[in-house]
Length: 71
Image (cartoon, rainbow, N blue to C red; front, side, top):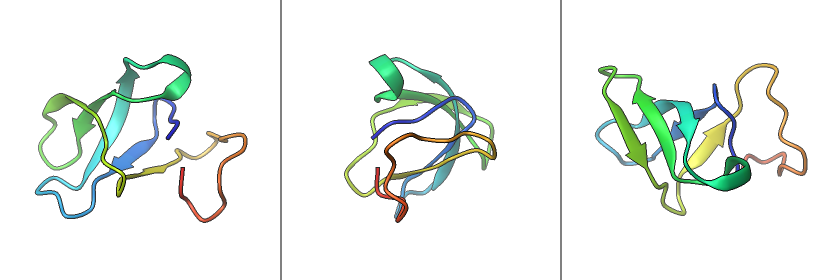
């Protein structure tokens, strides 16, 4: 899984299902990510599970990304 600042991390089945990626701790877009939850603005560091997905921000291209959205 690779992301860029501005992308949205979606965690299916979570109480807070989506967060804006505002920073990265991992190298080259790898997790963990620093996110701002869209529901309440809380900031947290998150390591996504295998069911999570990244929704690219408009204008953020992800080279080599699967067009089905599985990164």
